[in-house]
Length: 499
Image (cartoon, rainbow, N blue to C red; front, side, top):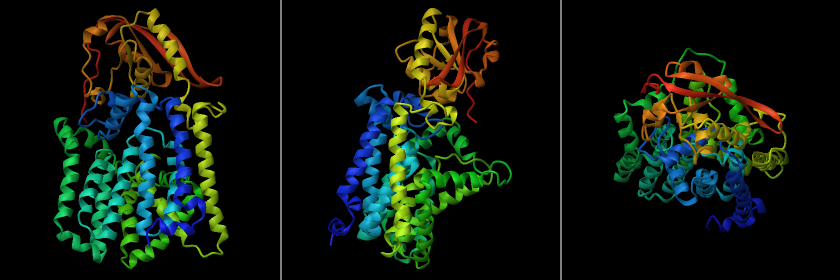
């Protein structure tokens, strides 16, 4: 009996038609929010990657930049263009998760897994954000799908697909390297998978992944391994501390959705029993998760783990929770109520926050509001446009990448916006001609990051001319300060430092 045929006995919300309806409605809301909510700082920065596609970048591999380039080719230089493929990936990723869970376990687990993933706060709320996490989650999930097909069909050609998906994942984020470690663990642990070591397709799949990753290797080789030093230099810095471990675990539970995280924990414990019996499905889900999760725990013993870092593990966490709920005896209504409540809560919060991102319901939370980075930029753009016109500014200077990205979008039809510091972030762009700075310009900074004093080494005139307030519904979020720059006296750009 096919997986689709087995869905007829499921509750409506777990059947493919019900899942399509739920995911479709959530996707429609994301499309609306993606085209109307302003950028957060990182998105505004990655928009520049899309305008200037490259083999790789200082901060991350290039996949999110390539996605944005594709979106801009179709939809122009717009808010929606930057986020278009992120939304598409969410739909395809849900389909891949359903297929993966269906063939590894059963359609009931698959239905719950899709609901849990879309009801997680990171995916449901943050599912429109164009950051490297989106393609990382997408290709990690597609790699698991290919491995699931392999384990069921025993067709060695699926290694070629798995290698391609993992290689594309490496073009999104370096953390996908941990998926490779998990695959090796799975091949070593499960007796029936050891036969694949003798298959040429396994090694060809690894070569495909390496070839996909080669643009990043070449870029790093050409730039003194700058991106590797930036990202891998984070591991194990500083001494051991318990300061961040509970923060990491608390944030992880919160972003999964607490009512889903609890079943996920019980599901993982249940799968450990199957892991000990060396069963392939449970071992695949757990062992491909384990290396990255252990790294994050290790990192949390040294420094803060950013809330978005565990994102590639969320499809596996959703499957763990689904396994627990789907295998409950008929009388266990409490846990089914918890699971259903988690889905309803997560989806309602997703709807509420997406609407709030476009039409703020309140400003009273100020900077504690997770959407505060979106707020007030069109008004700031209009005020700065008037100032630049009045000062006859030939350029707008900044000294932080987030503000630089925001202003570049706001001034896309005006004078060029140029970050004077951290020039390594902009190697993909043509270097501005320094004679541009012989003309008058303005410098804009958040008050908390004001570096006007340093610009006095480069300009004879550094004069404060305005203070602006970025706000939402009359509530202050932050202050920006504007300076007039004139009479260049020396070099303007901070020297590029690769390490």
